[in-house]
Length: 74
Image (cartoon, rainbow, N blue to C red; front, side, top):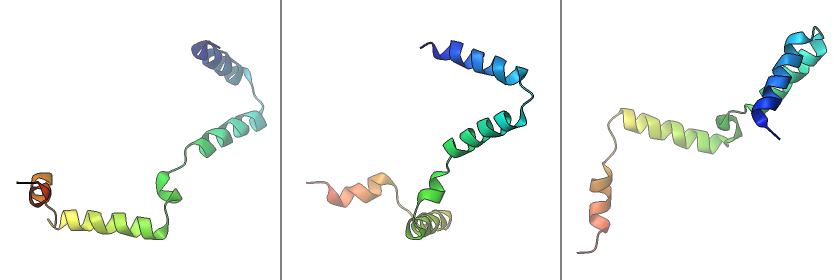
C-alpha cells in the first residue's frame, strides 16, 4: 500500500462529496484519534504534575548534578 497515493485518493473523494454525513463521520474519526493524554491520567497523577509545576515556578528544584552528587560513589 502506497500511503501517499491512498491519502491523495481520499482527499479527492472528500473534495468531490457533498454528503454531510460522510464529512461528519470523517471528522468523528479524527476527533477520536486525537486524545489528550491529560484526560487519560488519574486525578492523583494530574495533581502530582500540577504540584511539580508549581514547585518549579517557585524555584523549588535542584539541578541533576546537585541531585546525583550525594548518590555517587567516592
